[in-house]
Length: 226
Image 1: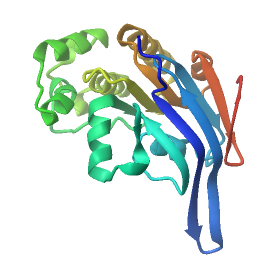
Image 2: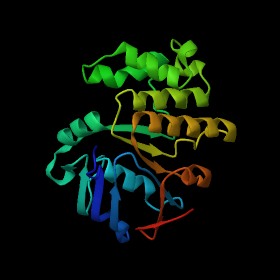
Image 3: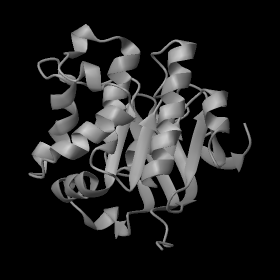
Image 4: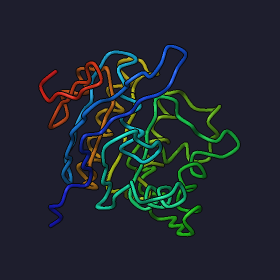
């Protein structure tokens, strides 16, 4: 059984230069996430939640500190190597669905497998069934509701069976009932596939479903309850 942390951030900081000088977005962030855990990161708008998610996933580089993702130090990797690491271990779900409009639901879900040269039609059919979209498999995004599009995005994230799933406000563009359905699906698939889940959200109901809750305040990360 895997026991080493899948994410480990130490003394993590991120600053940007602006017209009024250097702005510290994150400072001294410490975070360890173990296999199969679910954690939520809460914070006000502009608190740096999405910035932190991008750093942990290797989408952006830190100003200071150290990150290990899936047992690999991100510090030592170039952009192409970080992309390769993500392709192997990481899935993403965003507030905006990021589906390709010219592809059907099935084709959007298959895309990560095609890019890795590992197309598995049975696996695609399985995740379509998981998100209850088998009858809509040949529909294009414009022919689907927002909730259906987010279910396609969920299936696309899980089809590679990632070790880690990063979700950035996954219910932010959905009404309450649809959002609740997406939350239920997210945690159901999280349990089924044993995926480690890192959620950025302002939704306290969603955060409360996670095993641990963190809050970003003044660029610093604090553990606690919602």
